[in-house]
Amino acid sequence: MNSLPDTASPLYEKVKDYILTNIGTGKWSKDSKLPSENDFVTALGVSRMTVHRALRELTSAGFLIRLQGVGTFIAPPRPQSTLIEINNIAAEIVARGNRHRSQVLVLEKITPTKELSLSFEFAKRAAIYHSVVVNFENDLPVQLEERFVNPSLIPDYDKQDFSKTATYDYLMQKTPVTEVEHIISAIPADAETARHLAIDVGACCLLLHRRTWTGAVVATISKLTYAGSRYSLGSRYSPSRKS
Amino acid sequence: MNSLPDTASPLYEKVKDYILTNIGTGKWSKDSKLPSENDFVTALGVSRMTVHRALRELTSAGFLIRLQGVGTFIAPPRPQSTLIEINNIAAEIVARGNRHRSQVLVLEKITPTKELSLSFEFAKRAAIYHSVVVNFENDLPVQLEERFVNPSLIPDYDKQDFSKTATYDYLMQKTPVTEVEHIISAIPADAETARHLAIDVGACCLLLHRRTWTGAVVATISKLTYAGSRYSLGSRYSPSRKS
DNA sequence: ACGCAGGAAAAGTATATACATGTATGTATA
DNA sequence: TATACATACATGTATATACTTTTCCTGCGT
Image 1 (cartoon, helix red, strand yellow):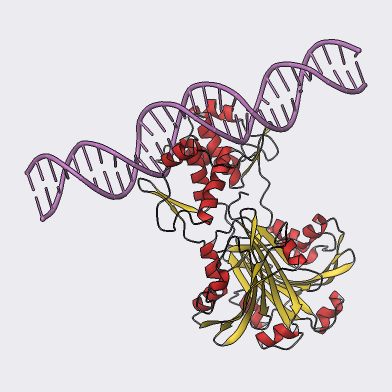
Image 2 (image 1 turned 90 degrees about the vertical axis):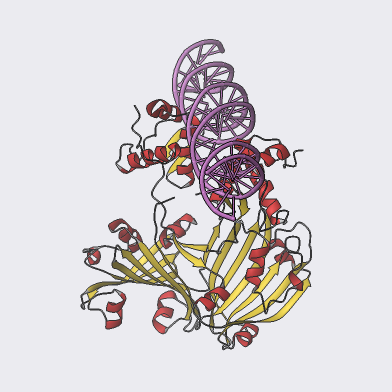
């Protein structure tokens, strides 16, 4: 009763293909339940662990939804998640063939405000690092970068020379990021920002607010301000349903 | 010798945490080999299959690189493609528990400018649909939506009632999107925009420029303008987690 | 009718075991 | 010296088994 293809791929991949094919041809309707793991075991003649692995991977790839005690179902079509990628500005500038330079304005250890401490999800008020850097593309300031960094994860942040190494590269190299939060908004430049970006007070800026986590701990909080007239965030994206 | 946390999570998750933590603290250097599966078995007192699952999931999440016959290594820092998801504004508003309403200002067939025709990658100047809609959240205008639509893909666009069906939903339902381009910038509101969004002329706006393709054909071009003071694009993203 | 107990079913986890496959390395042989 | 082979070790796959957790349903008693 084995209707699996006889390619050279491992068995659990064959089971995945078998299931994907049958979803595609509508063998199982969108609402009804898929066969249980044990059904597949008898139908395909493979062990339950192998079926389980196939189903688990299809679930994590977003094709299926599984409920313990209930069964396995076809996942609804993906929500329209059209994605914007946010990259390292220094790398972007260099990739465009332009010259990148950065100027460190502030690099210090501070006691955070109550609000900032809250953003870090700190129980107690603890000291954090604070840096302000301006990034230039061909001597034109394009990004004002303010970062707050958790010293328990990145202990020597204030000892670095960020005119040589981009803060971003340093942080990425120091600690793995397990979660990222982004908020993009448009705001008028205040006097300080205007001065550093060499734009008029009140001029439109893109503000990118970013928090990164390492495990359950907030690692960094960044406020990246782009001169609206000189920079935009772009991406091109092909949705594809491959794992 | 079990140094795993005693939370309520499954064992393979604890092993994953254990490994991620030790990567974070630099216990294993970036170049050297991680302990083998059997090393973990004796060090942590769990079965090899459990270790294997932990390592496999960390690998598929991009933290590790494994070579059969060689060993397990720390993956180079990911190119930080941190992603912003852009969703259907009508759905978002409803998801927030607020009321969505839209007002159709323009719905017509026009002959495109040369520039627009170029954006559509048209060989010859061909007529296209044009719509302008304002989207309200609880009667407050938050988004001005201007769209240009390729009639060869969506023939009846100008016959629809977009005060009932969101343009977005209609387009998504009509034609599959195989590719999307996004550009986000910050611009001051012009007189027209200011009037429709009920903001001051020159106030900061988020401008989201979007092109969608169906196959090799440009399907739609959209200019979505958000009142900067009332809207921001946000996302939270876990590189490691599923779904 | 109603509520509850208990069992069946389904996915989730964990382990032991076996074998397969790929890589590096050392050793014997041509 | 150089090639071939043997071996050890690493990850990869597959299975059998056992137990857990969650959910749903059924039947019994009130």
